[in-house]
Every structure is written in C-alpha cells, then in structure tokens.
Amino acid sequence: MAAVAMHGGVLTDYDMLNLGWPAPQPLPMKATTLQRFVPAAVIATQSQYEAVVRWMAAYDLRPGEFVKLSGKHVGKQHVSDQAMMGKATKLGLCTKGDVAAPFDGDVRRHKHALVHFGHAAVSRRGEGRSRNELMAAALAAAVSLDDKSYAADYADSL
Image (cartoon, rainbow, N blue to C red; front, side, top):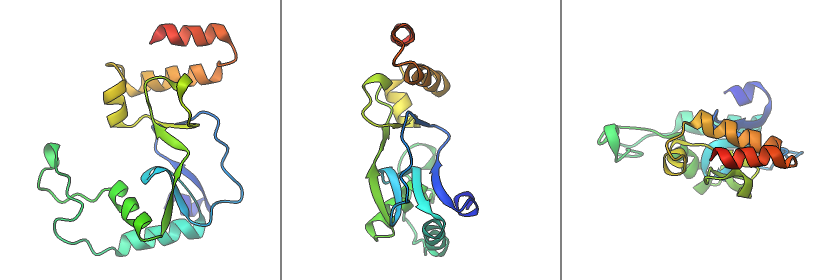
C-alpha cells in the first residue's frame, strides 16, 4: 500500500542494499520482482501495485495452502508474500527479474547491483557476523571500490 500511495516505484526490504542500480524509466509493463520471485525488491507503477494488492486481498486461501513446513510454524497456516508473488508470477500478474541476488559472502565479486542480506544468506555466508555488520562492511566497500586503501581495509575485516 505504501508504494501505491507514493505512485509506484521501487519498494525494497530493509535488508536490500543498492550498490549502484538505477531504477529504469519508464517503469516495466508489469510489476517486477527483482530477485526472481522473492519480493524483497519490487518495481511497479501505481496501477500495477494496486492490481497485485487487490489480487492478494481477494485471494481465496484454501486449507493447507502456503503452509510453512519447518521451524515453529509446522502445521500452522502461514501466508508468505514470497509464495504469493511466486503464484502471481505464474498467473502472469508479475514478471521476475534478475537484478538482485542474495549476499554471497563478498560484495566485491557480486555481479548484481542490488544485494539482499536476507536471513538465509546471512546465516549461510555471514560467518557469525550480524546482518548490520555485513551490510555496513559491504556498503563501505562499495563506496570505496576506487580507493584501494578502503578496499584493503574491507578485505582485512573479513
């Protein structure tokens, strides 16, 4: 709804870091998730966001659909925005892009300009560091990639 109120544009999770990706103009013809169907970053016009929100609000959830099968949610009804966006993509309401990717352990090698520091990626690649520490180090490295001394400091911090 926030993206609708702002007349469209890019909407990201708090743990998505932009390392130089400029949003395209004009916006795409369909709402587009930028990390396959993971809704951590979505770009759309106001009317495209409205269409997806209306579809989600009217969706008739069937028993057992979108149930999380692990952790504390075993057997409990759980509707995930990721699962819904995956379904919306299959139905043609959205399209999926490849601009963003999960954090892979080293932002300097990252081929994507949008990096998602999601729970799974941080758990796998974070080597015990917090999401905030990883994002701060990645941002410092990205800002200073032309300055070899800062880049070396980042490498030493890993």
